Image (cartoon, rainbow, N blue to C red; front, side, top):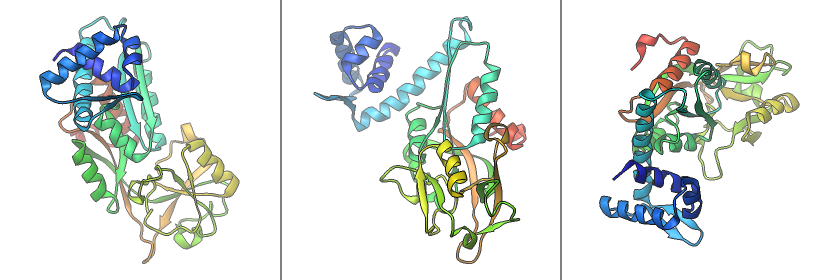
Length: 311
């Protein structure tokens, strides 16, 4: 097995086509096909299924791809460390649920590498996609939350993907609304008070369950629900429809502006409050490079977590 073959596998998976991959890699298609076949024979698995509609990963191929991405990234990071920094583009990617504090930490991380050549990515994704991206090493870090309600399913998904959850901070539920909302002056907001207003939720795909929702307290029955995939649209609906969403209460005013506020949610016997355990996920045993470590430090700085608590 060679690094070149690993690069070939990664590119083919990204392009979904041998022809497109060969164009990207500047190698002939027969050469590419031969290299993949030799690799498959060497490791004893079939990585790709070839059809008239393109190439698709087998189940074994998906597992191999995740390991291959991790290996190739580690090679690139070693190469970056011992090469001329002016000629090497440093790479880093994070996938996250919709948290403005993650954007803030990403901004501060980028600033620290602003004079270098880099290729960074931040992906605000559905919960399942956050997990998938980290599992497949499209992202080195994923940011999401666990609670008593969703922990069983998330733990199962993380274990299946060879991932581990690192706790960052606990948060009670807050109601996120715009400052002109009729309930904006309340000291706290109950479930009963919310029944006249639409609950706004980030769409998790047609087959996703409430256990993968980004918002806390999704086990409650909300009479009016609007799903959206975009944070800007959600903010617009807060203003236009007096909508609300349930969140951690950690709001980055510097990026989101001062037109929105978070009011504590007060539970009752039928609609209890709950704790969001926000954390990051990564491959089990994975050691973050200097960019990932910088990003995690910025997250902790913003959340007020002592750096000596680093695991």
